[in-house]
Image (cartoon, rainbow, N blue to C red):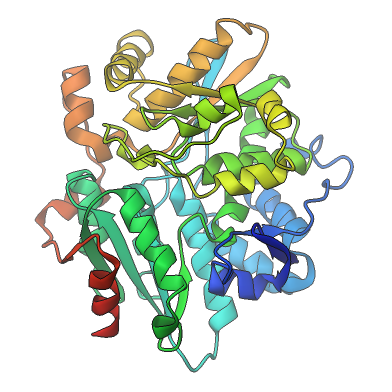
Length: 430
């Protein structure tokens, strides 16, 4: 598997280099040189395949000979250990529940696969791998759980102070061991900027072997393609639309990669909160990054999504082509709360704020496309947003043990300003 930089297609590297380096030196993102169609008959045979077998076949198709078959199968089997069920909501709308992993968020799929992949590539290495990851909420918890106590790897998580839920923060800051947290006085975009600047800092690259676990790393996107096929397998309708709650747009990019591999998806709905730069692009053809806006669906509070450049490359930077496949939607916090309330009162389903945004887009789309079936992604367990959800549905939620156990753990994090010098000094002083 060869990959190229979105800033320079002549900059071609191996999968190992792309995964361990994360970002090209030119500041772009790595993309597969080719995304070929899956073998004929694969989609038709999905109903006879287990989730693990589907994941292995797709991983093998994308990765090729970069990893021996037996090793790759082991990586998949150790990563995909929990389900991704499709749950009917209405006749025309279902939800794909992606919160059944260790950290109760969809990013468990990517984090666990990435941890296994990096462990494979660094086996026997002399130098420890240091992973930098920016999180707007769920990424950090998934990465912390996926990489905790992985030999030869340390993880430094940057998160925006006061902009993640209490339980999300506990997931980032209480594991200890090889997991370290930096609480940044700023937004997620500031955290993401600090990570990118660190990769381009020669002082750090000479001292650290740096990688990233954000969706800027292609190792995150590969496993996120798996559950789109798994969801399609479970859906009776063959005219399927996916509604994807979107922040940094890694999840949607993975879906578009699945479509390019041959998954027959009619359309994707880019469902956002007030941070609507991509929906605005889909309507106007102009991409204008903005400062992020704080919302109750905090994991989507991104004003300059990194993966947008990958979306452009998938469509040859052709706006009309992307706009045919992807429709953009944006919703306010009051609309999101009403969706949580309506889902609970009308269908006895409890959604988190991110899934509620996905539901709103699905509901709006199906109202004018009644012959299609929309699947919205429920990306996190509602208990991770306990205060908001309980207040909205006016009743207590049962908290999973893996979350309730966190309440007694002590937070350990280093508070830093959003200035790059503060972060680089922290890294150089360690």
